[in-house]
Every structure is written in C-alpha cells, then in structure tokens.
Length: 131
Image (cartoon, rainbow, N blue to C red; front, side, top):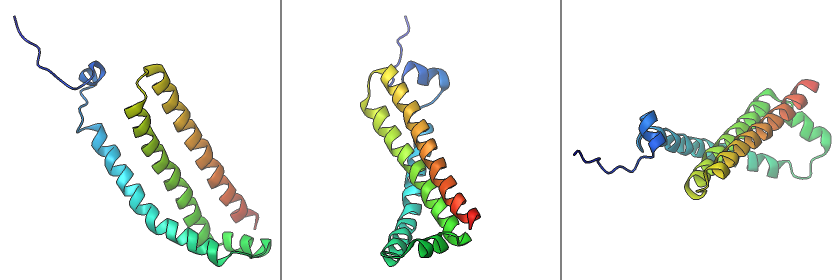
C-alpha cells in the first residue's frame, strides 16, 4: 500500500499545480513594487496639496488641467487602488476561512477597487478635457 506524502497544498492547489512559490511570489513582488511607486507619488501629491492649500477654485482647476499633473494624478489613483486590492486580498485569503464568504469578499473587493479607480481616473480626465 502506498503512502500519500503530506502536503500543505489544498486539493485545488494540487489540481492547478500551484504551490506557495508560484502565484504568491508574483503578488508579493507586485505589492512591494506598488508600495515603492507610491512613496514618491504620495510625497508629490501631499506636497502639491499643501502648496495649494487655500487656493481658489480656478487655481486648483488650472493646476489639475496640466497634462503632467493629470497624468501623475491618474497614476496615484491607479497605483493606490491596485496596491489596496493586493493588500486586502491577502488579508481576506489569510483570515476568512469560510469559503463562500472569502469568495464574496474577494469579488466585492475587486469590484469596489475597480469602480473607485475608474471614478478617480474619469474625474481627472473630466477636469483635464473640459479645460
């Protein structure tokens, strides 16, 4: 009689051929790279908002209408919500043990992050092109 080797992979992981070093590593690196990208973007954004504190509507509108500023704002929005999605996904996968709730949570997370990122990008584009 053959003994089955003990494994830490789930049955689904066996079927898909995924182990800890296959999918998880890519997500870990993506989280680190987005965090690294957010450091200068966040400093730029905070410094810009502080410099514009107390500015009137037209000054703010003129600042956001610059293509470089609009591009950086879009980058801030997209990278922030992608990073958030990766980080919260890990929390859900690690701490939610009821599979239907885990699935629902991941779907809700992806939907929420997508909707909020698209709203942010469209808001910046609206200001940019309505000039």
